[in-house]
Amino acid sequence: MPAHVITITSGKGGVGKTTTTANLGVALARLGKRVVLIDADIGLRNLDVIMGLENRIVYDLVDVIEGRCKLRQAMIKHKQFPELYLIPAAQTRDKNAVSPSDMLAVCNALRPETNFILVDSPAGIERGFRNAVAPADEVLIVTNPEVSAVRDADRIVGILDSLEKKIPARLILNRLRAEMVRKGDMLSAQDVTEILALPIIGIVPEDEYVIPASNTGVPVALNENSRAGVAFRNIARRLTGEDVPFMDLNEQTNFLQRLTRLFGK
Amino acid sequence: MSGLFDWLFGRKTDAATSSTIAKNRLQMVLVQDRIDLPNEQIQEMKREIIAVISKYVSVDLDHVDFAVSNRDRNSLLVAEIPFRKPDDPTSDELLEKLAAAKAQPSIELGDDLAGISAATLAAPSAAKDVPVAASINGTDASLVPEEDNNAETPADAQTGRVKDSGASDSTIIELDDSASTQPIDPVEDESGST
Image (tube, rainbow over all chains, first blue to last red; front, side, top):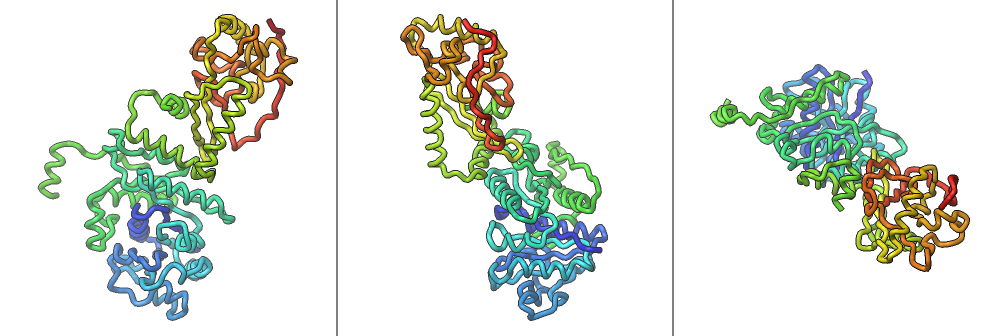
C-alpha cells in the first residue's frame, strides 16, 4: 500500500493548518487507514499539543534526520487509533535543521507501510514551507474567507505553479460563517474559489467546539456534535476517493434551538 | 470607478456590501501580486499609455480609469479612456459623420486606431501618415465619447475591438497580456465614405 503524501499548508499563519492536519489524521484513522502525521514546523511545534500527545515525545523529526534514533522510535502511537502515528517537530532547533531531501528520505522510508502521510507545514514561504512540500504528492491549501488569508494562499499557489515538479493543489476553506456570508459581511466559498481558481475539497464552518478540543487534546473530528468535525470527516472521506456532498452550512437561528444550547445539550 | 467594477465583474450597482468590496480589492491586489510589477512602474506605464493615446485623440484626463482584473489565473489590464468632448459648433456635423460611420459595421479597426475620428474614416488613405485627430474645417476633430450618442448601441466599429464585453458605455481598450497582441492594421474602409 504505497502511501499518499499530503502536505497541508497555507501561507498565512493561524488559519487552521495544524487543526486540519490533526483532524484529517484522526478522521482517516477512523476510516481504518494507516496514517503518519509529521509536524514540519521545527522550532514552533504544535501538532503534538493539538493531538494530546505532548507528554509522550521522546524523539523528534530532527533526531531521526541527524541519526540519533531510528525512524520507528520517533513515531508516537495514538492511544485510540493504533494505526495513527505522529512524528513531532523539534522544539529547540529551527527550520534549517531539516532540508527538502531529508523530508523526502523520511517519507520514502514511511511509504511502503502507510496509506496516508500528512505533513503539517509551517506558515510562510521560506525553508520550512519548502521542506514541507518537498515530499508531497498533493497539497491542501487551508485558507480563511478573509482578505489577508486569501492573498497569502494565492502566493502559495503561485509558488507551487512555478515549481518544476507540478503538485496538484486543492483548497480547504476554514472558519466560514454562513450567517455573515448571507449578510454580505464575509467572502463566500464561491468568491474564494473564483478568486483563487482552485478546486475546493472542503468547507469547514466556524465552530465553538474547536477551542475546547485543542484545550483537551481531542480533535473535533471525534466529537459527534461538532459541525466542523463533520466537515473534517467529510474531507477525509473525499481524500479516500468517496464523493461526499458539501454540508448545508446555514446556521440554526431558531430561537428555541439557541435556548437549548444555552442550557447545554 | 464603481462603474468599471460593475462592468468588469458583471454585478448590479445595488449593494456595495463589505464582502463585495473585499472581493474587488482582492482581485485587484492579486493581479498586482501576480504580475510582480512595482506600483511606481504601474503608474509610469499608465502615464505612458495616456501619452500615447493623447497623441491621436484628446483625452479627458479627469476620467481616465485603469483596472487590472483576472480571469482564471490570467491577468488583464483594462483601461477606460474617455475622449474630451469638443466645445466647438461643428460637433453636430461630427455626430452626423459618426452616425454614418456607425451605419457601416463592416469596418474593422485595429487597436491603435480605436476612437478614430470621422474625418479619418472618410479619408482612409490619410490615416496611415496623419495623426488621427485630423482637422475638420480647421477645428480640432476630437472624437465625441460614445455615451453622448446612443448609450444603447453596443460596442461597434467605432470603438475598435472590444473583448468580452456586454454593453459598454465608453471607449474601452483591453490589453491582454496572456494572448499575443494583434498586429497593427491600417483602416480599411470597405464600404465607401461620405
